[in-house]
Length: 237
Image (tube, rainbow, N blue to C red):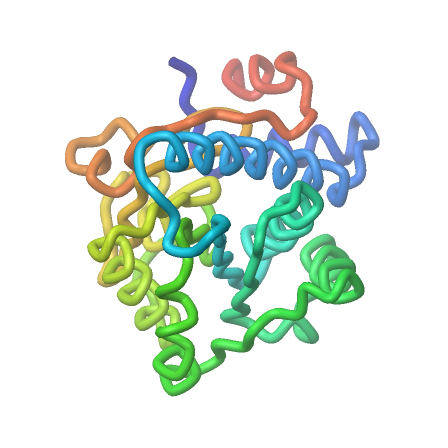
């Protein structure tokens, strides 16, 4: 299986944008749409094996800043368009987002998918009951660029995600479980434990490291619209 480091993934993105002329917002749309398809399949599996907490499935999406959060807003739109009840929770104020993530946050809000703000520990605690109603929690908090230690209220959000996982919610991590170093596979002070990790372009080097399996769960690779030749080129150096 082909695996890539964070720097190699960034290089694939750079080549797709700068040399092929694929706008970053298109790559993000492709990523989010494909991740949403995986989540829809997971909901079908849950429907067959278990039951939903309510009459219909509910999905909660935790959006951080940067591109990982942007992916979350795309996923919210796609699931909403597929008829799924979606609730979006923002760990960073959408007004502060720029670039492709800001574009997709704005689109989601114009579709009346207004995020619940979780900008501090109090807000996280206040909305814990609402999050507990979700059958599936989507972790779009921290992406492949993360390393080191999780800071501030992001720690509380990840800890809550794991508590809800223990209570029976399915957790889907987008690209990488938040708090996991995608190169080393080592967890940080707060790391999401996912049932499924939908990872883009290729699996990440750290996913195969000892102990990482507890956090990544089942890994599903999806593309972002970058041709395979770019991956081969990056691997050749």
